[in-house]
Length: 118
Image (tube, rainbow, N blue to C red; front, side):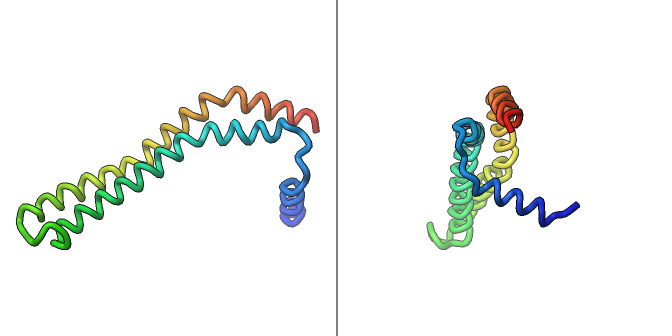
């Protein structure tokens, strides 16, 4: 197996002009299938990390003073942030699977027409 040849072909295909609109349509369908999962995952991840950081700041006394109430509240808020971060990937996988199932038929049919043409 000549890996240099495979790499050269992949690179040439990447830079070759895409004269068919089917390839563009295939990329758009792929993006459309993955976009909702990506948006949700980034949003939940950022919010969870911020919640976790806020909880840790409360627990360490950086905000809210160094009281027992803020310490306990910080731990509770931090655990909520950790749970959000922990659930982020399984939710992403389910949303991605759902998006792929929704557009699978169209993508497969379009990919078959493109590959049969060549």
